[in-house]
Length: 388
Image 1 (cartoon, rainbow, N blue to C red):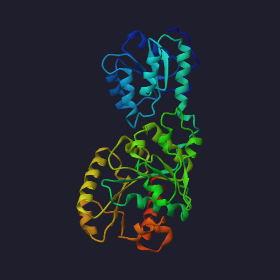
Image 2: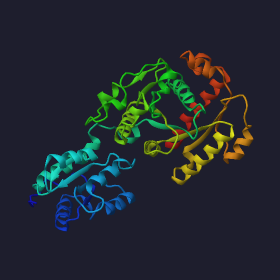
Image 3: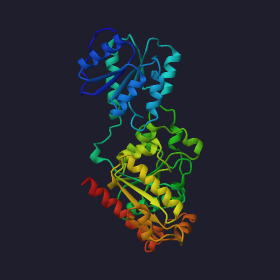
Image 4: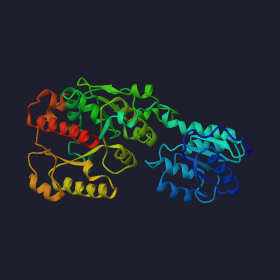
């Protein structure tokens, strides 16, 4: 590599250099440190993974061909983890042939450069990748909308019904810009309950290099209450096309457009769900007063605690989806905590859904609507208190 030096990196960033060639690795470390970066190094993919688990860097520079876990496998693994799905990755290789380039981009690399390129070229690519997180003009975190994740440990507890009704109330009565991010991919229940027809979905942008604000705006569908929905996929097959970077980018966009983003998450602790929890201000865990649902909910709580998510960010919502079931005290004893809201059995929820209507808007004085209103107000108050 030529010793040509470029302009110093504007802000000290953490860069991890991974290469089994000691000479190349030392040359890169010296050059990047001279430009003002904080540089760490690893000799192979496994060592790199250990360092990244401790603390992800701002940029990864990795050789392609290494023994054991090579650069391609390292990149694939990082793209599958919610903490590193959007980590900028620059690949190095001795040969810049078509197969190497395609394999690198296919694994998820952001850019590719020959090992023995002029260092000034490498420096320019490094600066470009480090600027990429700001390329969409993301506003300061204090100006971003608050995120409430709606979770459930078992299907059939009415999670999406409560979410869309609460969102409609927040938009029409609290006058908040409210958005729904439908991550329960492949079913489109939120748009069905709101009786709105999605056009394109997020999955249809799979494989495209950029996902800018204009593209994401084109996906939004608006309900008469003012709520907007960002649909992700219309079938489970389409849902498989979604990547973590796409999901994280879409959520970031919604936060820049709305005061509150309500996320409808699927059952389970997938990487996509964990990426939502990373930025969530509040998690509403919906359950029903029946043993199968409560057992699943108790197990979900245990896993949630092991993930070291702050306990204050979790609220239990008891939704009485049938006229029968355990009473409130039995539920509280079983779960070890008191539900923040109990939604009484409300047959009109389903009746109005079949007619394309929402309980909170059609019959706002119904007991189920009043409970949903209380849930909406509680979400707003809890989040304002938490960030205040």
